Length: 314
Image 1 (cartoon, rainbow, N blue to C red):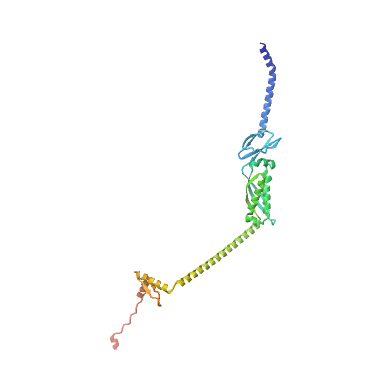
Image 2 (image 1 turned 45 degrees about the vertical axis):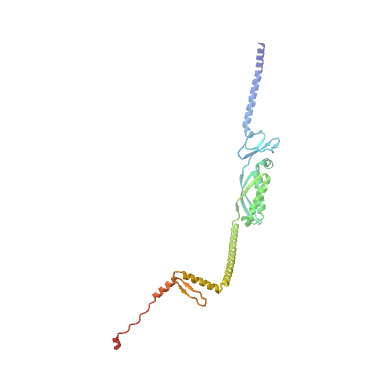
């Protein structure tokens, strides 16, 4: 009985203290829930598809050796996680370039770029999230102005010797030194004053005419050389043939032709050539029929009839 009484007295003494602790615990729990709701966006950070995060600790600085991948990350509300897009991005930009003679040229370009994933923490620490405005655009613009400023307007307009391509390659290499990869720089348009464009187009037209005339002259020269070579070949061939045509060869060929004529069943006209060894001239049956037809057409006029004997006697 004494033990039970003692326990009852102890519980009765502790109950006010427990009630106070419960209320205090409930208060702290409520405060914690309120702070969690208010700071939820600073505690739970989500990196979506094609994104990565860099964490900045309030007391130790940027975490250099770790890039936070896609997914949900829980951090201290005092820290800051910056999300970067790691996919290819496109930026449109326009600026002016002065030629070597001071003529203003307006360029409109499109830049396809992305941050280097492994160097994302250094990019965040040394340049920052607005690296496009701090590094990419200024360096591309500076390099292209420096490269194109050594040429005339017509050389830039016609991309002589690929100078625009060389300027683009140089600008891409320059930007790549700052933890950013530029895949390509596309020139969307290149604008000059209208009178300059017309003068350049006239110049190009005249150059094309000149090239056409030069091509025609070369073609005519080659054709003349061909005809000269052909004439020389014909001359040489005739010389060789004339040297080989001896009287004996001609007589032999005449004998062969006569033999072939004798074997033929068609009617022919043979005209014997003049001279000792004159070759026969052979005409086909058509010539023979033509001669016959002409002979048939010839008519002999009738002789006039004599008068009667009676008239003579008178």
